[in-house]
Amino acid sequence: MMTEEHTDLEAQIIKDIHCKEIDLVNRDPKNINEDIVKVDFEDVIAEPVGTYSFDGVWKVSYTTFTVSKYWCYRLLSTLLGVPLALLWGFLFACISFCHIWAVVPCIKSYLIEIQCISHIYSLCIRTFCNPLFAALGQICSNIKVVLRKEI
Image (spheres, rainbow, N blue to C red):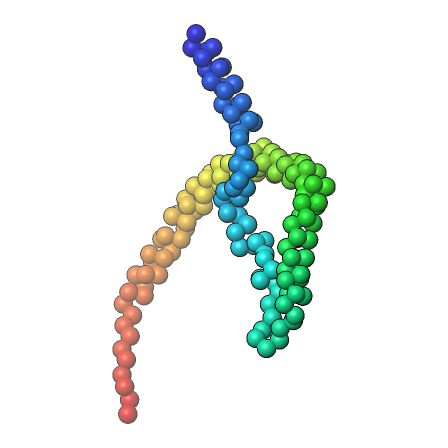
């Protein structure tokens, strides 16, 4: 009974991970592109006072910029969105795989090995350097420095 409930819960968790609903209104919930690619007409083209084009040219330029940016993005995302999502998914899967199966085990192995070496190093320091520096400290402890101001 208990293992059956555990299996059902596991299946539900796996289903929830792969069937997660996406927000079609807010497509940048973590604001990763807040200041980077948010470019409007006013961010790119500006006419200083005294150097104005005709009002009609300015309005048509604004409309042309906005509409061409919108449809060009839509066309590019339609043509390349899915292949690039596949590429990025594959790349991040490879990075995750390498991290899980190679990087972390190597770091853990290194830490285990370095711990043994650190004990040997610590023993050598305590055996050889501590007495040496204690003797040097005793020798130098009787040195006195006097500063005099000569005129």
